[in-house]
Image (cartoon, rainbow, N blue to C red; front, top):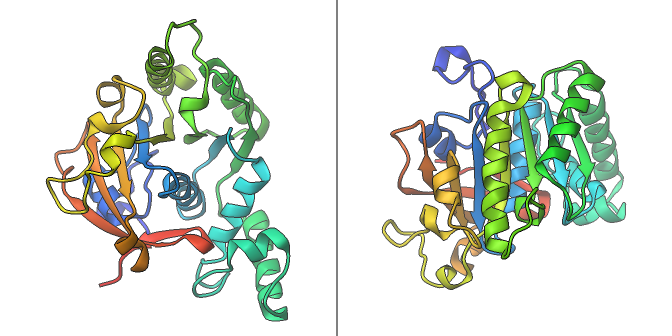
Length: 295
C-alpha cells in the first residue's frame, strides 16, 4: 500500500484513506461525517475489504477506530486483522500467514510460528499504530448504542475517534417500529448518517458498513464498464443511494477468483468528481489481504 502525506495532497487532517489507489483516487478519501457502504454479494469480500480499511487506517495512518461486529465473533475479527498484519513488510512474510493456521494455531514450521509471534508483538505494542477497539454487538444494536460506545471510547483512551465500522448495518435495529424490514433499514441509514455528521459536537466521524447487493442483479453484472452495479443495487433499501456519501461495489467472478482479483467501482462519491469506472484490486483472501494490482 502507498503511504499518503501532505506532499501528495493526500494527507488532509482527519481524512481516512484505504491505501487502495482506485478507491482513494476516485473518492479523495473519506472525511468526518461520511457514511460509506461497501456492497457485494454474499462471500465476495465486503468484510475482508473492511478488515483492510481498518488495518490500513490504523496501522499506516495512525488513526483510531471502533468496530462493531454483529454476525461474527470479536475474536474472529481480531484474528483477521492479525492475518492482514502478517503481510506487512518487515514484520510478517511475503504472502502472509494463512488464516487457517492462525485460527488453529497449527503452523507449517517453527519459522512461521516465530513470524506470527513477531506479528502479534508488533500489532499489540507498536506505539505508532492507532487503536482498533472491537466491540461484540447483537442484532438489537441501535445507533444510540453506537453513540454511547463511541463516546466511551474517547473517554477511555483520551484520543479522538476517526472511524467506525459496523459489520454489518443491516442487522441493526431502528429506534422506530416499522411495518417492513425495508422501511427499518431506510431508517437505520438515515439515523447512521445523522450520527456520522453530528458526533462529537459536530466534528463528525467516518462510518463504514458492508451491505448486501440485490440477488437478482448479481447475475447480470460484469467487470466491464456499463454492466456493473449502481447505487440503486444495495439490497433491501431505497434510501442507500440518496443517503450515503460513498458507495463502493465489489464483484468476484470465477474468472477473477482464478486471477486473485476483485472488480471494484465507486458508484457514488458525493464530494468527488472522479468517481466512475471499474478497476481491479488484488486479493489473497486466505491471508485477509486486499491490495493494489502491481504494474
